[in-house]
Length: 314
Image 1 (cartoon, rainbow, N blue to C red):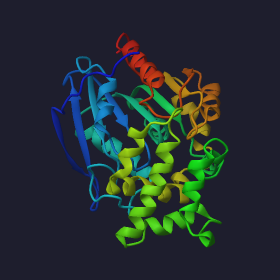
Image 2: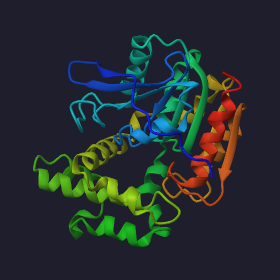
Image 3: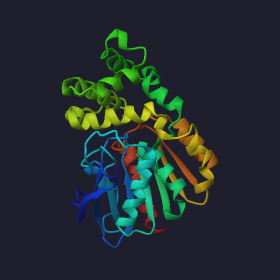
């Protein structure tokens, strides 16, 4: 097994004001003159965990991480106003210009893979290469799978997620959770957020991993994730149905590496396979004995090897 690189602290960080409501937290790590790599976190709303810095050789890469609107250290937390996919794409471009970066590698997992594709398809001239993990293409059937299909694999976790709601609220899980998540009562929104976030965390690994689930004991972290995720799901992730596949020609000449867990229950492999089948320059790796989480050893190894091999190209 390959180990993650040792923990590092940012050499520079700050808040970038992107509109009259939101300020996004950004940080730069590693080599100031290294190859820029933009790391896009999942969720939406999960925030940029510090372990994300550790997939990259800090002697070679200039590692740029930012918290998307309402997530992590960005302000205001869990804010839904002016929070759409198009807003996030604009934020990425503002950040690239602000940091004076010409081109960068884009690296994203789960929702981060969706945003990586959406951004790259809109700004292909700014991309060196794309690395995706646990592909999510934002289609209705993928959202339905998350809300209902997972019960075929993790019935006990789904039942806990479902039964959190009173019986009269279970006909529409998404809308019922959303109403609770936007409730101004912190007890109501906090309990709903923890239920949602733990459901997602418990289903994200092939084998049980208490440490991942326990991250969401923090109510604010859970609320950022659950409220923003439900907001995006209700609005079809602010994309046309199938958009990320329809626009694949925009990045047909850009190399892509796709790392996909065979037993990913959050983002099943079908989406990664469909994407790779129409993307001429994509290399798909199906990782056996792995689920969704980037912290599972086989996924971790594949991501580290991919970024190590890329050092020969850039």
